[in-house]
Image (cartoon, rainbow, N blue to C red; front, side, top):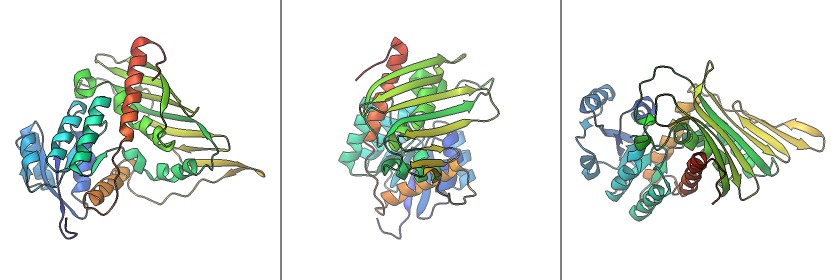
Length: 337
C-alpha cells in the first residue's frame, strides 16, 4: 500500500461498541477512509452511515468480503459470529480487527489464527486494556523484574447493576458463549496474563452465580494456578450494587507491588519501602476511548505496513483457560489440563 493511500475500512456490526468507539475514532484517524458499514438491521445501518458520513451500506457479509475497494474489516458483531466473519474476511485478503473474544472456544481461535497466518494479513483482537496508559506504565515493572518474582495477580471488573434490562444476545448462551465471564472476564483475564507474560495455566477453579431471567451467569470468581507457581485471582460481575463500576488489577511480587486504578508502584529496597509510581501523561480523553484510539491507530499502522503486529497466538491459551473455568463451574471442582 502506498503511504499516500488511505486504508479503506468497513465495520461489521453496529452495536454500542461500534457506535461509541470504532466509528467515531476511525472517522477521525489520519490515513483512514471509513468506506462502509454492515448490520443485520438495514435501517439502523443507513441511519448510522448518514450520521458519520459513510458512503456505503453493504447488504450482506459476502458483499463486504468481495469488495475490491476495501482493505480492512472491523468485526464488532455478537460473539458467536466473530470467528466465522474474521476467517471469511482474512480469506478474502482483508486485514481484520476483531472484537473480543476471538471465538467461543479453542477450536475457533485456532482456525482464525491459521487463516490469518495463511492470508499473510494483519489480524488483531481488540484487547483495549493493553493500551491504557496506566497498564502500559505498569507492565515494564513486571517484565523487568523490579517487583521481584510476581506470585499473584488479582483482577476484577465489576459493572454496576442496572435493573429492568431487556435481554439481548449477551444474555443468551448460543450467541454469547457465556455471561459475565466471557464478556468481562475475557478482557480482565487477558490483562492479568499479559502482565505476567502469558504463562501456561496448570489448573482452574471457578464459581459462577446465575443471572436473574437470563440464560447465563451474571458473576464469576476464579483462581488460575500457573505452571510457574504463581496464581491469578479474578472476579467479574454485571451485578455490583454500587454507585459506579469497579475495575482494578494488583500485582504482588517478592520485592514490590503494582496496581491500577489508580496507578501505584512500590518497591522494597535496603533503605525501606519507596514509591516509584511513574507519572502519567495528561490526557483529556477517558481511559476507555483513549485505549481504543491507541489500539485502532496500531491496527491501521500495522495494516499499512508501518508497525509490527504479531499474530495473537496467546488467545489460544486464554480461550483454553476460559473453557476450563466453565467446566470447573459446571462440575463443581478444580480442573487441571
